[in-house]
Image 1 (cartoon, rainbow, N blue to C red):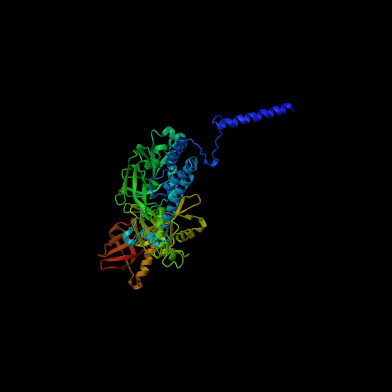
Image 2: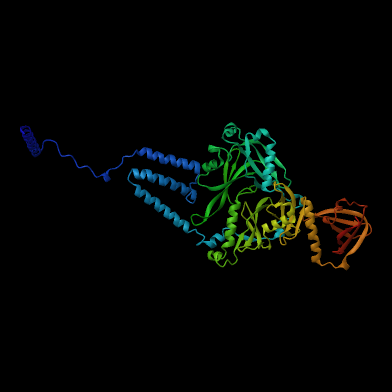
Amino acid sequence: MKIQADQIKDWFEKMREKAEQQQRGQGPQPEPTPKPEKERKFKAPKKFFIASVIILALLLYYFLLPPLNLHSPLFWFTFFVLGVYATLTLGIAYGVFKKMALVLGGIFLVLVLLNVTSLELFRAKSYASILVREPGDFTADIQEIPVDRIPTVDRDTAERLGSRKMGELIDLVSQFNIDNSYTQINYKGDPVRVTPLEYNGFLKWLSNQSKGIPNFILVNMVNGDAHLNKLTENIKYSKSDLFFRDIGRHMRINHPTAIFENIVFEIDDNGTPYWIAGTYKPRISWFGAMDINGAILCNAITGETEFYPVGEIPNWVDRVYSAQDIITQLNWNGKYQSGFFNSIFSQKGVLQTTEGYNYLALNDDVYLYTGFTSMGTDESNVGFVLVNLRTKETKFYPVSSAEEFSAMESAEGEVQEKNYKATFPLLLNINGSPTYFMSLKDNAGLIKMYAFVDAQNYQNVSIGQSVESAYRIHLGEKHFQDLENQQVNADEIQLAEGTIEAIFPVVLEGTTNYYLKLAEGDQIYIASLILSDYMPFYVPGDYISFEYYQTTEESNQIITIKGE
């Protein structure tokens, strides 16, 4: 008990001394009250976060290749990815998360409003005028192609021919593949498909990139000839190159503000390989109706690039506008002529493109062809359009015709026992009439037959083992239909016979006609090639017998050849 009393006494003594010291201002001061936890700031490594944002920005730019253009959706996507990361790092670390989030959200709302102002709901008439359809004259605009110049090779067949040609060179096959682009262009007056080779993987790129790509493939669409063209200087910029020789990255670095998507391969008139990229700008509000305003041309060998505005693009360039962009604009034009709500409810005068399209080579340019049909479920076209893929010049031909897939089914039905499949048709001018031409393939994808289908009467189908035979059959049917239309009376048909004094073949609008004169008179007689397989073999001195009717005072049209 005495120990506890002494301890208590000592404690009171210490407390008294402590109180006296505090009164005199001496001794330990009371500990400061700690700040509330919420007022503490986390001292983050500032340089690390700033560096990470910069690194992310460089990576996004390197891989996504966004244009530095405020009208580009890809630019804003990249901006928001970077902005969200910066807000979650720098914003939280330095207590400005709310401010940064509000700024980011505000920019997003502004962009949404800008996008709303370009909606088709509010700007339907503007969308309809992005592409202008001009009336066209079918026979004047679409020249008749001689039978030996009709393109017979579609994309699928071109790929097969290219692969076969590539397989002939074993040393190339081990190092390179074929790029699958196969761009259709005009080259020295011929419709062709061209495509470059590409590196066969990363290791093959390492071993060959110093030399470059030595060849490109050219397939003639008329006769199917495939050539593996050897370049004097190799391609150093391509889609299969890596790092800064990747053609997309190369174009982006040289044209950082340009908006472009599709990059296509072409060759100029000298066979020099180029990459062509159409550049875009919005035609409606901030983001709406992106349309071509020019093109970037890049020499695939040297890497030199140059921008050309629309109207100044070199004539040898064939593919500036993409097919998908043209189809989209054609549908805008067909749907919104009478406004947005008309396109949904009454649909008066509303048109749309058919499901497929093809290309025509005309006047050293490439045109996209597709049909226009109503919004209903009928199987006929009210007309068709041709669009120049370099200038976007568009012509509409109000020709009532069969829808392309109906014509394909009609051709397939003629040989249904063979189970052949028709290619998407090519629109031709045959004797002034719109005519579908297509190839018929077996299950292996090999062309077996050819078909001509009257576009205005798709039940009129001419099938042949060759283009020439199908063409002659079609001309024969057309010839006799014309005779019926002229209503030649039986008493007007006369018989003539005698010895040929002179005979000359003349090609008129793609059709071969033979002008002949008999030794027994001064009259001139005209016979179409389709009347007889023997027509090309007649020579002066041969005997001939035929039926004819008089067309003018000096000439007569032969109807049939007798006595062969």
